[in-house]
Amino acid sequence: MTNNFPAIKPEEMEKYSAAATLSDMEIFIFPELLYSLVLANILSPVIWEWKEDAWFKEMPKLTPYRKILRLKQFIMDNYDFNLDLETWGLTSKQKELARFSPYMSAQEISRSNALFGYEGDRYYFTSGIRQNFGLDKYSDDVIPYWKTETVEAMDAFKYKEGFSRGAGECVSLSTLYVAALFIVCDLPLEKIYLMATPLHSQNFVDVNDGLITNNRRIVTRNMWFNGTELTARAQRALRHEQVTIVAHNTGYVHLVYPRATMDKKAYEKFSDKLQRFLTTELNTEILYNFLRQESRLQSCFQFEHCFNGRKRYIAAEKAYAYEHTSSFRMNDSTREKLFAEIDEYEFAAKPLAGRICLPEIEAYLQRHKVDFQDKSSLEGLIGGLSCAHAKKDEILEALYNFCHLTPRLPGKEKEFVPGDALKIASGQSREEIMAYLQSVRGENKTVDLAFYAYRDFSRTDWRPFIKAALERNPVSLAGCSRLTEDEVLTLLESMPDQSIYGEKELRVAQPDEVWNYGRGDGLEKAIFYANILKNRKGELPFELTLKNGRATLIWPERTLVWPSRKEGEGSVTF
Image (cartoon, rainbow, N blue to C red; front, side):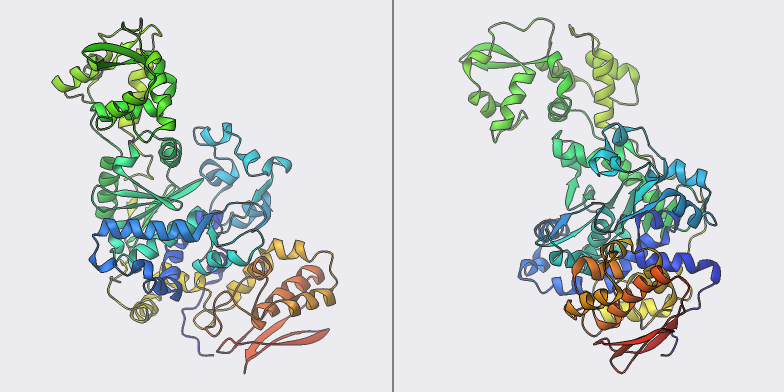
């Protein structure tokens, strides 16, 4: 096999092997990998095949926003969110801290990575996150791998017991969205920004007023301020967490590293547009949305309603309770219809004592524009009104936070040393993009790593993949722990000779992917078996070769051969 890839420096071998496992913690240490996975999905034939799906037949006629809505529904229909401990297994803090020590200190990791001690403002941690994920049954040293899936690995969940369709965790879904927005929706990569916090990954998309992808869903600016529980959950990461990485087709900005490779103007544009997305003016619609979300403050307010020429009054919490069983909402356009559904006995003939009457605030908003940067403007909104619960300060603070969120971004004080922006455009074919990326990978580390994330044995050094296979595939080891070596061979023989990465293209699954999805090409089965032997027998030397449709694994005790449909040849010793 001709080597048509850049040589790997010894000190970079860990980073390149991380491209094969793509765990959340590895992406935190090696931020180039976040966009490398995006490129791996752009290179994949899978998403290009979506363009031929009948669901996208009318795409050329749609506006960019309508295209995104159709893509969202496709992802909703075909993928589940999955973040369990069983799929990719467990490791330990001490093991991973030792592994990452040449790149980042333990203190830096622990103060900014959720798996190693970071607790933000403690929102997620006081809500019992270790119990939610089942980590409470292990010592504090035990942490999950939480590997990020390629689109092929996401699709292959349909082969896993208990799943009926594709699945993936938040980073998998965010990178899938970027690739699909580019390929299926013809959206320029310049308009898409990835945001990774210690516990979540989302994208900001610069279309219309902006939108945020959140796992399978999308959140528009109007939705951000609608006050629903679904939106409140989507807001958690930006409201409660420090953004660790911002990634773009021009580079990245990382919380810990002082140098940023992202174009500074692109980063400033992103920061400004995201801030505008997260800020709104106060009007009656926003006020009612605010009270929907802040149900704890509803007891301070009452609605006034004119019925048959008489005013009547209802406690805010009673009015909002009727939203749960109605298609109408307590908003300007449907409020009267909701009032008509409320039982007569819920209303009082006189104003309720000690409650702020919402029409008074409506009248104030019609006469004044509330400036959230001006304290006197805020005080004028509530100051002259009476509240028996004495929660005026709490109301003002909550209202300000609802209407104005300043995200905690990595910061503009970085030393911006931009690299080469990726010059791929919608309208190009997959083959043209592949050729372009191949031509620039020698100068662009993110692109070079993309071929490793793509699992392309025809365009990469095999050693990083093998290193990852032998060191970071605990699920298959645990699954075979009670099997003899011959029984492992019998198990492999019983599996379909199918690779989740296609029949002929020389792309290869890791052992835990073979185990989880119960299938593998002969080359993948050879690597699976080598992982079992290597972890049982220690330092035995192995040689793996692929030639003439045969994958051969050689070690001092034995030689085994598996048929392989993968086209190409190569070898590696380990």
